[in-house]
Image (cartoon, rainbow, N blue to C red; front, side):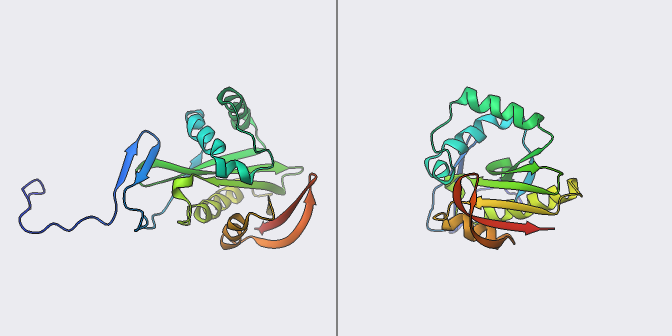
Length: 193
């Protein structure tokens, strides 16, 4: 069959369109969500700096952090270089079809390596589709495989961030209730090996 031949008859309109421009993507039909696709995870590299900076500085992302002020690119780049060189930090990027970066998951390994602190963020345009849950699940598998001594991962979430609390629960984390952590009142969630 010639795929380039003119179409005869009625053509079915696609359910959705994605317009790509660099690292950005826009859906042109918001009434129909993107189909669920597997995500790909990988360790972050320096080339992810602009994506990670944009993600970190999105207004809704900043509101979930303890430090809510925007970060300048040069400061972020310095942080990223240190993070990539830090043997006690694993920073993953997750992507969907076409290598489009949609989020990140970071693990900070503590003490003897038996536990880590995790954080996740998903780009505003890609929330509500389960990518954060998938990113948490897939990176946890990779993290535990790479660090056999690790037995648990902790998340400390602002108590009013119900979306993150639900995402961590869907990813298999157990809710341990409210705790005081590094001077902040938060919900503690834990994933054990």
